[in-house]
Length: 71
Ligand SMILES: [Zn+2]
Image (cartoon, rainbow, N blue to C red; front, side):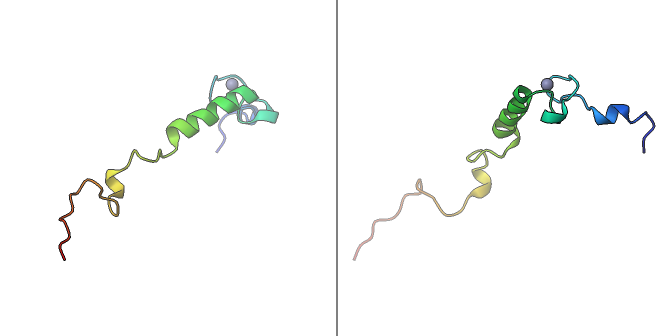
């Protein structure tokens, strides 16, 4: 499955800036780009707690008014 010379496959471009990746920081070109990707991952790709409240509906229903208990 390699139509092109595999020379390029060894050095994929940095997903952040597009520069040739460095082996040390693969798949990025530098530690900085790796850091950028990490931040993207944490803030974007990762499922943010709280954003899917409706889906997790279940136990806590603080807004529902409880009827007063009478002995
Ligand atoms: Zn880069």
